Structure formats: C-alpha cells, structure tokens
Image (tube, rainbow, N blue to C red; front, side, top):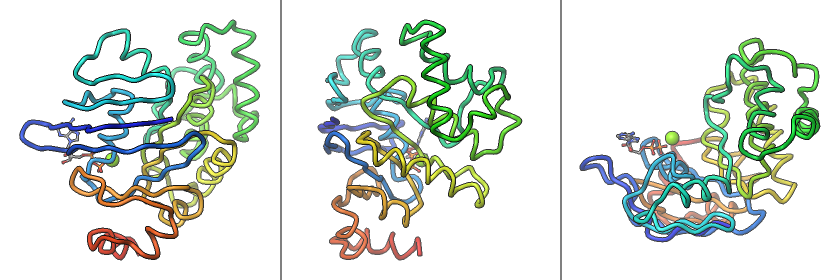
Length: 243
Ligand code: ADP
Ligand code: MG
C-alpha cells in the first residue's frame, strides 16, 4: 500500500530525512516512534507532500511519484490517496461538526449534498458524535474535536490514513476516548500510519513498529520484537526513556 524508496529531505544544512526506505502492507497499522526532532513528522508530511522531499520515490495506494519530478497533476493524485489527522485537529472553526465532515466530500470527492450528509452522519455516529453535529468545534472538548477530524479523514475513503501524534495535544483524561476510536479503526482493515508517544497503545494496536532517530529508521519490526528485544542500543535507550 505504501512504498518509500531513498527518501531524503534537508532544511538548510539540517538533513532531517536521510535515505529512508520502507513499506507498509494493505491493512497494516504502523506506529512510528522516536525522540523529538528525529524526523517523524517530516516523514509523515512527505508522504502526502505537505513537505516536499529533495529525493526519493513515494508510492501510496495506486500512485507513484518521483519527488524530483513533481507536477500539479501527480502531486494532486498522490494526495488523493491519503488523509491526515493532525495533533491540533485543524478543523474549520467557522463550520459545524457536520459541515467539517461533508466539506471534503462535496468539494474534492464531488458527492451531492445528500450523499455527503448521509456519509457524514454515518461516520459521526461511528465516532460517537451524532448529538454534537450541529455544534461548532470550539464548543467541543479536544477529544471530541479529534474524533471529528478522524471522521473527516474517513469520509474521503482514503487508501491510507496518516496520524501525527493524534493525542499529544489532549488533556490526559481525553486521550483514552481517541485511542479507543483509533483502535476501532485498526480492526477495520484500514491502513494506518501513526506517529505516537503512547507506547502501550502502539504495542497493543500496531502490526509494526518503526523506530526513527536522527533522520533514519534505526529498526522496525513486530511490536513484541521491538519492545521486548530491541536489536539496537539506540532503540533500547529510547524505550527506557519512555518508561
Ligand atoms: P519529530 O516529528 O520527530 O519531532 P520533525 O520532523 O518535526 O521531528 O523535525 C525534524 C527536524 O527538522 C528538527 O530538527 C526540526 O527542527 C526540523 N524541521 C522540521 N520542520 C522544519 C521546517 N519547516 N523548517 C526548518 N526545520 C524544520
Ligand atoms: Mg513531530
């Protein structure tokens, strides 16, 4: 479902992604872990070209792009394959919960208003927010807002959903409801790539753990392997620091 080859990205003299390659299978849930500043967000944002890498080939779903040969057309096509859930939700403040979910459908997926409403109401029910659909984001808790943004990501029926620290901006008591929503998704054969600091959650929900440090993938593998028997010293040290 995802194939990344030789991805590199610098900000000035700072090489943030250094020749990264990896694959994700259809339906897999991958958790990317690693210290702050290791390049996790840049990697995720590169996969839908919110950051433009300097080099590398990216395949998501049906679309493959060489990042040295980007055009309006292939950039758009690659972005259509995925949806993103951000740490700070990024909802439209002046639109209701329902409008936040229908907007992507009527604008980019060319659904009629009635179709969009049907899909959005169904998804809001799945994330437990039917009663809040007429409200504006500011009147919701952070956990509720993040569940709206998950419904919005699902609405466009993407091949892959990327989530960048979806619970890091939440008050501790609201983390659980969002993790539960993500865990429900993980059981539905949706391909998910999640950057997270929630190690217990990653261990429980992910099929694969990717540990990044300093712009490279230090190691990756099944959660049992990476968490219980990390191969690399750097991974061991990081995992100890999260306890
Ligand atoms: P992580 O998500 O693992 O914390 P990031 O991908 O956000 O790491 O950042 C990796 C490195 O790239 C950091 O050194 C950060 O300061 C730098 N960086 C990220 N975005 C930018 C940017 N837009 N301009 C300059 N430097 C950036
Ligand atoms: Mg980050």
